[in-house]
Image (cartoon, rainbow over all chains, first blue to last red; front, side):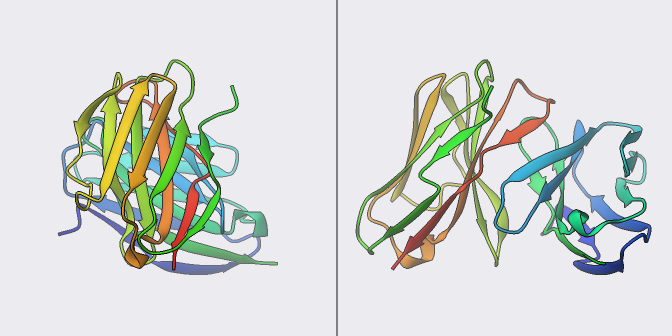
Length: 107
Length: 113
C-alpha cells in the first residue's frame, strides 16, 4: 500500500515549458514536503507546506488539504531543473515518500 | 553551519564484513533520521532518534542492522555482517523539531560485493 502517489513517474520537457508534478496522499498530515535530488547527489528540501501555496523563484507548490493533493509547478523550465522530485507526507516527525518524478529538461 | 555531514561518501566492502556509516547532524537539531534509498524501493526510513533516543526502529531490516546516537552531534549505522542486498545509498537527515524542514546529508553509497 502506497501512502503517497506521484505522477508522472518520468517527464521530459523542452526548455521554457511549464511543468506540473502531482502528489496524492492517503495519510493525515501536519505537513507536505517537496524534495529535489540531482543525479548522484544529495537531497534538498524545496518546500514544506501545510496549507495554500508557496513560491520560491520559478518554483511554486500548492496543497489542497481536503482533497489530499499537492502540486509542484516549475515555470520557464531550464536544463538545470533536471532532477528527481520527491513528495513526502509528514504526519509528525516521519516521512512517507512518493516514488519520485524524474524530470529531464532538454535545451 | 556545514549542514548534515556523512562519512564515508562511498564504501565498497566484501560480503560478511562489518560496515559503519557515520553522521553528524546540524548543531541544535533534535531529531535525526537514517534512510536507505534503492532503485526498487525508493527512500525508506530505517530509524529515527529524538533527543538521542531511538523512537522508531521498525524500518531496520533485520538484526544485522544497528544504530546508535551516543550524543547530540554524532550517530552511527552499523551493518554486521554485510550482504550484497544491503547495497544502497544511505542518507542521514536532521530536523530542528517536529513539523520543521528536514536537512539531508550527501549520502553514503554502499556497495557490498
